[in-house]
Image 1 (cartoon, one colour):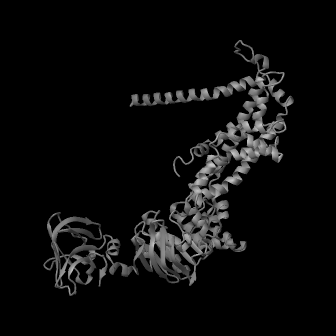
Image 2 (spheres, rainbow over the protein chains, first blue to last red; image 1 turned 135 degrees about the horizontal axis):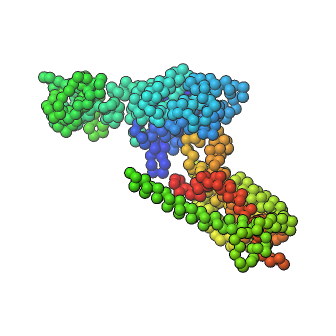
Image 3 (cartoon, chains in turn yellow, blue; image 1 turned 180 degrees about the vertical axis):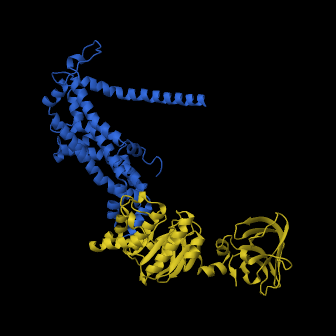
Length: 349
Length: 280
């Protein structure tokens, strides 16, 4: 069981930045998710924790011990890969046993441990097969078993579910979370899928351009985004970001006017409001626009309003229907409004 | 519909016709060899065409009784297998290094290894002759082994390298985090995964070695180290003149095992010969 500290981590390949400056303190037994678009540095950061890449600058510590010069194979870290990375010439049994063999676990224990790990992911009856004869979900479970078999200090999971179909992904998500709670192993999980991040994480680390944008619990990330990148990245559809001006507690943008904001702000600002905090309004409307799109999904209706320069997403009632291009009004829940600096994108609190 | 089907049939017929003609063109000399090898010597050198040839095992008996054919065969097999083993032992680690490690000058070293294949072999014939003479290895199978290994090392290295590059890096990363050292990764993960590539490289090297003539002739000055290819050349001299049927039979016998091996692994072989053409 381990606590992981990353301080001032940088990774540069020639003139190309992989990771610019990463500082994280990962608690023991925590499940932390690195979330970001591809190329944001999340996988590189994970590979540095694994010891598969060396940081150009900064320190990686596990339980206070500096790990920078410790070889990957001596770090007691198990990794699950996007492509499963099962050894194709070995049976599933031999695959799961491989880490035990490499670490000179006594032969008498090996068989028991392999069978325990296989049972944990319900793979017991497939041990004699080669990876090629398994389905994607089974391969993923075999990869998980290989990772848990030697009870490592740290689990690293690099987009482990992204090759699976949606239904299987959900089932595996639950299994991974369950396994992690059961084994109490510090876990770093990399994904670009925000649903995975929200559902799995104790804390989420949002990365972009090699920098951490925000670290927080899923609730914090969702309701309290630190900047416009996080606000626009999390949520489907994401937070509405409306550029406008603030004067005397009144926010204005073309077709939009929000009064009574007790904020000591003036000049250009960006207003952020989540689609579920917008309502189709009667009298007290903040937005007067026209209907641009109506998308019923069954449990709700996504409504898009064309308001001057902005398209505003609204999660409307499941019964809501409308023709296109007809006038419609929308009100915001004032308590849920967030403001961002229009130039820097940073949250104004 | 019917006309479409007929057109499809026609195009299939034309394809078979072209391929059949080409196969006949390629295989005719081989069959001709076999035919010569199995006829009495008198019949081969007659100017009149013979439509119904006489079958005879004269040549077969002759090559085994008049010449130490078993010894030539043994020399060939020893030199070839030995050279292929040397090649694999040297080329696998070299290819692993070229395919997987990053260091300064790696690509230059790779090119240097390949470039040994670019010069005309005759250029180094005399130095090699003196080298082996000074080592006291002239006229031995050991020298042939070393020369064949040297000739083929570059191509074996590059074929194996191209297979190694195609192995997902993830496999190695997984093995490393599982606690495997570089050597164990090579031995337990990489080599089993590219076994078809290794076999292909070995067969290609063996074929080149079987056909090697120049250096063998240079090094093997007596029947002590003659291989099949040089022995064949020796059927042409002496008081008996050209012994066509023996030449043809030995050539055919040398051809058959290679042919069978190539047929057995032809799928992998084409992959090995077009190495790097598709990816990496």
